[in-house]
Image (tube, rainbow, N blue to C red; front, side):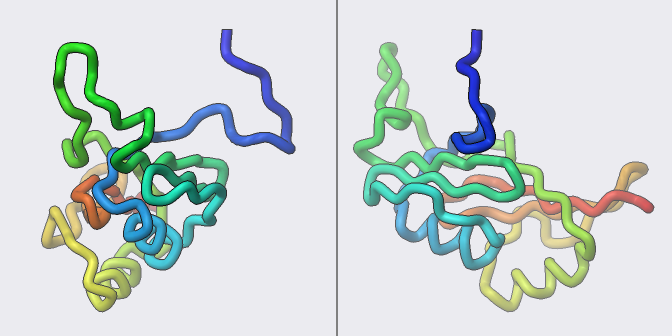
Length: 134
């Protein structure tokens, strides 16, 4: 069974990203994407949050990034991603391009549910910015 929590404790569900440089990741998530810093144990670990979602940033030396028992290393990247809904995707893309963000998809992709673009944090982890169809 999952541990119980109340409004004064951390959210029960979060996402963990493997990070190369925790202070750089904190700067990116708080400045570029509006996350709030909850806990800073740099250079090993930090936690940031945004609208009830807790993002754990695990750098070298954190327990969450230790090698697995079979020897595999836990590294940034991949395609599973944090999904952030935005009100005006075109404006966000323009703002993030001006700020020097790295884009995995150069153009906004539109589909039946809405529009999306993929950016990367400084370690190469993907973030999807999504604007639903109205």
